[in-house]
Length: 117
Image 1 (cartoon, one colour):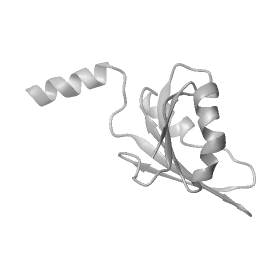
Image 2 (cartoon, helix red, strand yellow):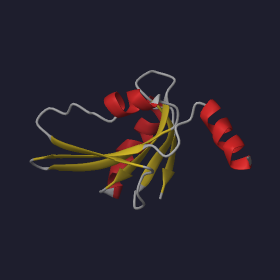
Image 3 (cartoon, helix red, strand yellow):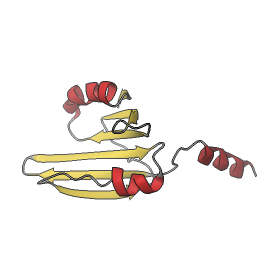
Image 4 (cartoon, rainbow, N blue to C red):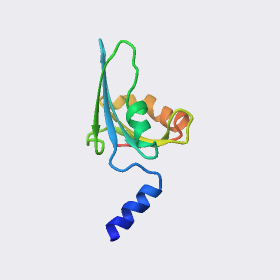
């Protein structure tokens, strides 16, 4: 009964549980991997819109996972998405020096909280 109550409260809070997508994009001199952990985006919209980037000239692979994998160098927590009220955590993998650009973008543009790993 307690587990049912906790799951019900979680569902009513509007938060997605166990829903993330790893987006890996590659181009000639570009190799980027991020993971978007859903916080409040409706599940269908998250899967069909937010996890389906249209990146011209890049090879893009998307994998749906229960949660973002370990090993990110930074996370933008509670990032707002595209001027909406939807929230997600964005995990960044690869070159840690990219945090120089990602941290200000996270805090100013996405109104999130940057957390270095």
